[in-house]
Image 1: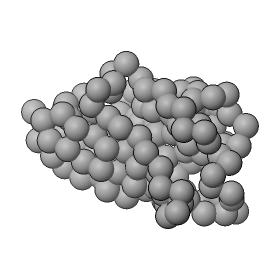
Image 2: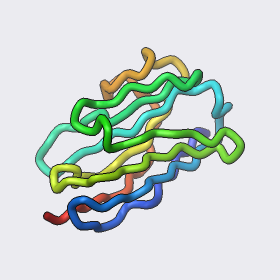
Image 3: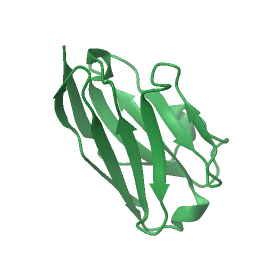
Image 4: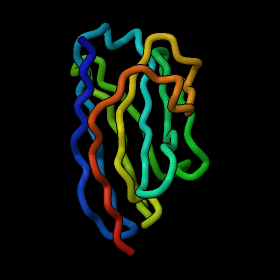
Length: 124
């Protein structure tokens, strides 16, 4: 059974930083593509950044230059470093995985496995 468990969310002031982690289990981590999505209250789920099994990445325009995705294959862990946070980054952040998603897709329906989410709140 595929399991994704996020952590690292919290409350910060605008301009601050947070680093999210997602520990994965139940599948061959290295062969899966992964991504981070987020959903703010009253808004649709939004793709933040995706990373394919070969390391290709794709960022949403809204986070380019501020967020960085990375993987630690030894620890089966996905990370999202978030810098220069803005109030509009406030949302529940989800880690997702799939073995056959189009490369770096930021479309939520393309992804099969989802974590429970971790809340990020940025105050201005």
